[in-house]
Structure formats: C-alpha cells, structure tokens
Length: 323
Image 1: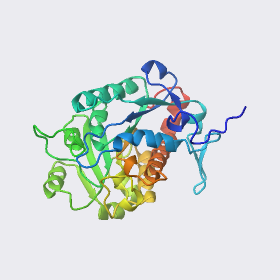
Image 2 (image 1 turned 90 degrees about the vertical axis):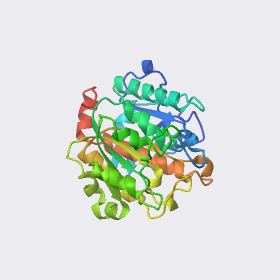
Image 3 (image 1 turned 30 degrees about the vertical axis):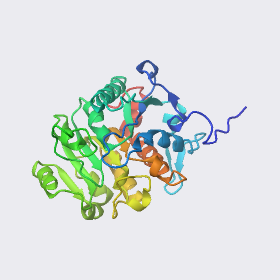
Image 4 (image 1 turned 135 degrees about the vertical axis):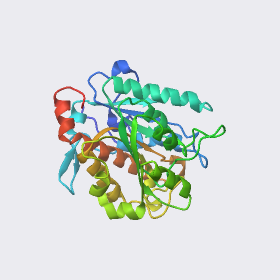
C-alpha cells in the first residue's frame, strides 16, 4: 500500500530521514541532523528548547517522492541525498537541566562523533549559546559566518559565561576560528565597545546598511574563495515581521530572499563544513507555526545549496567524505 505521509502522520524526523541516535547507526550517511533543545542561555523568555522538534515537524511538509524543486529557478535539490538515504536524524542531545557546563560537553561529544563518522553536522537549536560547544567539536581551522541581529559577544565573568550573549566571545578565542564575520547586526542593544573591539581584532561586523549594499555575492566575497566555513544562522537575522516566534526580533532585518541569496552565494564560493540554525521559539509563534516552517525552509534550502555544489557531489558519488 502506497504511503500518503501527511505531515501530521508518523514520527517527525527531519525530512523523514532514518533516526540514528548512535554512531553505530551512521553507516552510509553523509549528513547528520542533531537537535539541541537547550534554552537556559536565554536571558529573557524561554521556549527555544522546543525549536528542534517544531522544525522537524514542519520539515514533514516537504514532498519527498521526487527531488525538492524550486519552480522559480527550475532547480532540484537533495535528490541523491534523500533517495539514497544519505541524511540521518541523529536525534537530540540529552540535555542536563540546570547544568549547562555538562550539557555543553555532551553537545561537543555528539558533534565530534558525527564528524568522526564522516557526517556534516546540521544542528537545530535551541538558543544561540549552543554554537559555542558545536564549534568546539571541530579540529579543522575555519572561518565563522554569523547571520544575526546581535553580536552575542558579551564579556565573560564568574557569573555569566554560557548565555546566548557569550557564544562568539568564546569562539573568537579558539585557534580553530580563523575569523568571524557577523552579518545583519543592528538595533540599539549593540555595544559600541564590542563592535570596535571585534573590528580592531581583524574580524568583520557587517551592519544592515552594509549588508544591503554588499548583496549576496559581496557577502560571500568577504572571505577568500574556497575557504572552509562554519555558518551559524540566528532566525532574528530576518526582519522581526517575518519571525513572530522569536523572542529577540529586531526591525530593519534581512528579507527571506536576502538571507537565502547570501547562503546560496556562500555555498557556491566556499566549502561549508557544518551549520546551525537557532532561536525559533514555538511557544511564542503564531498558530500556523510560521517561524518554525520558515526555519525548516532555511535549513533545507541551505542544505540543498551545499549539496548541489560540484565538490560535494564528487565526494558523495565516490562514497567519500568531502575533503
């Protein structure tokens, strides 16, 4: 009997991929999707811990009986990855409530297991603090590209060190972070001191006026062609009118075409080694789950851009890992 697979039926794994929560189940896969349902780093309203589940549920709305297709460009996406079972859903990190230090250790361990198995990590948050332990799992030096309304670069002290305002203070101090490029920074909650400090250290803080001026190709060209990059996407990089299910939205943000155009250009010019998508807050969302659906679109679209690149396809068809 042919399955109909309505979005409200079945176990909500990402794109109905096989659930492989143990490294012993990763065989044959090239991409691992990992949820990090952690929002204890949020200094305002909780709820983004439910983001991974909501994004997975909305990913069930994509038809999977043929390649994903963009009628505007005539482009197909993820045909081989879906048909050959190259995507696995690695489940969620087992969060330790009220123990963020231990939770972060587990995040790093889970991502490192995926990398050792040859999987490219796609991580669903959760608040933006999780990017720190995710990036800590990589041994390969990379450039970090951050799409965000806020810098998340607060000073670390004995009281605060693992909130969603601290991730990139940690990351820029790591030897594996070759540079940090922040895209879409805006709003009156940004510190002059933090902007000047990052720029003075050789990193890039690209505010909205410059983001619009550069355009997609200009953003990708900020790094040398062929760079290894890790990309982190906060949903509040998008304008707040698009993201009702986000606690930290700001006006004057990116449009959906601006964000997707930049992600496409990055995938075409560089080698994306992993990415995360964070800060969808389902309890704040509208009844249709529009922000979670937007998250599923961004994650799936970016993954499609990456997998359509020649270097990825060559390694995939050779049954290897993109080098």
